[in-house]
Image 1 (tube, rainbow, N blue to C red):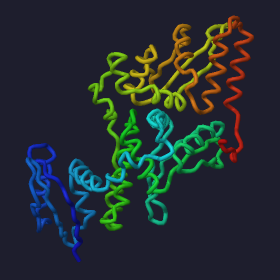
Image 2 (image 1 turned 90 degrees about the horizontal axis):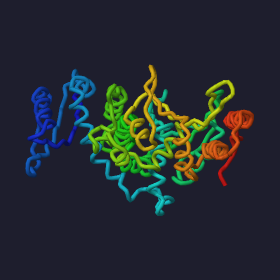
Image 3 (image 1 turned 120 degrees about the vertical axis):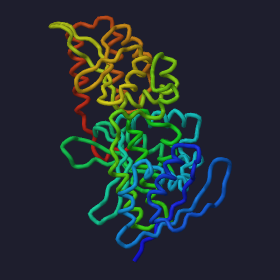
Image 4 (image 1 turned 90 degrees about the vertical axis):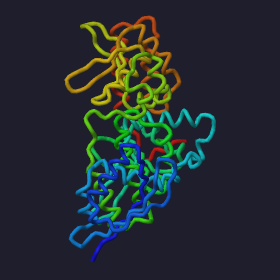
Length: 380
């Protein structure tokens, strides 16, 4: 029994992809018994490839043999036929007011910090897809805010010792209609963009009614096996040639709304000891990857990037910088980070910041992070 695999591809004659595709087709021509030219527009030609593979050469075996570049090229052509569903007109109706752009950029910032695009195969052999944002369960307010703005998904508090809460969207149609359009228009700035791209390709393949269950399984499994390059940089930074040289170049890519969201996920407002009897205000954002993101944040906030052995950070205790940060983040945040900020900012504005007062503020900020809201909490 032979297995048939149909692919519609666009041959770009004068490009690297076109040359690559011709090369691969020639390599596997033993399996191609019908390659027809459909039409030609300029320097591009669409061809219909009908591959009848002998029983000993399965579609899975064929895909194992082709190069990664060729596989990615085929995948890109498959998802192009399904991408029409992720248009801007499908954006959540609850966020179509004048502040929707700010919300989407903020959401991308939160996702760059604490978001996950996950897909896996269940024990029953079914592929499941999840867009998830995790937070400490004392920050349920932020998760319910996201849910109320998007109008889909759920908030849960898993029974775990790490006190984590999650906002999740698992419905494939909801992900395609409500989630993908956001991240297609407002690009992730961290290396999470790589994970998103693989996730999107996989979910569109899963939703493709022209593919068989076997074909979907093969394509998605191969996508799942892809590993992010160590030097991966989000394509969002290509507009400045992946180099942050000035505050203007940083602001071309990184918006304030994104930075607010990223700070809600990854930022820290705290009190730190600088001497036996001296406590000062501090601000910090730490990352293991994506130093270009920290470089842009540093330019915008007037800070510097400090490189450690296992991570990179932007941090300051400088009075003038803290004063700037107090103004920059004023009335901007949606979650419990807003409460931490207010305590931090108000204590900074006090004239007499003696050690006893600062010690009380430090303990207060530590205590509020240990607050655990009831899992049945709902945003009013």
